[in-house]
Image (cartoon, rainbow, N blue to C red; front, side, top):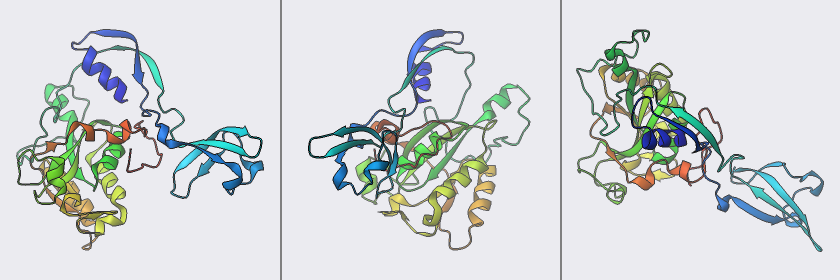
Length: 297
C-alpha cells in the first residue's frame, strides 16, 4: 500500500514510534474525472431495459466501466459511466508502530552486477542472523518497453516492497527522459524491483516479465507500438545466481526470443513524475489486483 509506505517513511523515523488514526491512501489510485462520461441512451446502441445502475460494460477500446447514474430527460434518457476502480480515491485510518528496520538494496542507488555476490535466496530463512536479514531483500532489474505499465505490474506483486523506473545499459551519465527517447544514449527504459525473498522469488519475477512481454519477446527493439532501442526488453542480473536463472528462463522460449540477458549496469532513476505514474493516474496498485493495466494515466 503506497500510502502506508509514505506514512512510515515520513512519520516513523525510529523503531518503537507509533502514529494513530492516520489517513492513508488505500492503493486504488486517485479518482480520475476524465474516466467518467455521460452518454445519451438512445445513441448508445444498448438495450434500455438492460442498462441499470451497477451494470458493467466493456467499451470498444477494451476499457471496463460501470453505470453509476441514469437520468430520465424530457426527450431522452442519459446514463453516466465510470471507468475508475470502484474504490478509487478511497482511504483508511491506520494506527502503525514501527517494529524493525532492515537494510535493503536500492534505496539510494541500485547496485550493478557483482560477480562475488551470493544472494543466498535459496537459503533457510529461519536463521535470524544479520547476514540472513541482509540477504532477505534483493533487487532485480527488467526492461519491458514503456516502464509505466511494467512498474505497476510489479507493484501489484506480493513480496515486492519497492519499485523505481529509470534508464540503464547506456553510455551517457545521468540521462534525461528526452535524451533517452532520442535513442542515441544506449539506454533502455527499465524497472528496478526490491523484493522480499521470503514472500516471492527471482524466478517468479522473471516469469512475470516474460508473461508481460508475451509475443513481444520475439520483436527486436519493440514492445507493442513503442519502437526503438530505448524500448528493447531485457533481464539484467545482479548476481551469478540471477544470471543462471534468467538465462535458463529466457532460453526456454527458443532461439527466436530476443530478450537480452545482461549484467546490470548503472541504473539512473527517471524523473519524479515518471515514478508510479499509473498509480498517480488512478490505476490500482493493490497486491494481486488483476484489473487490466492501461498504459496511460
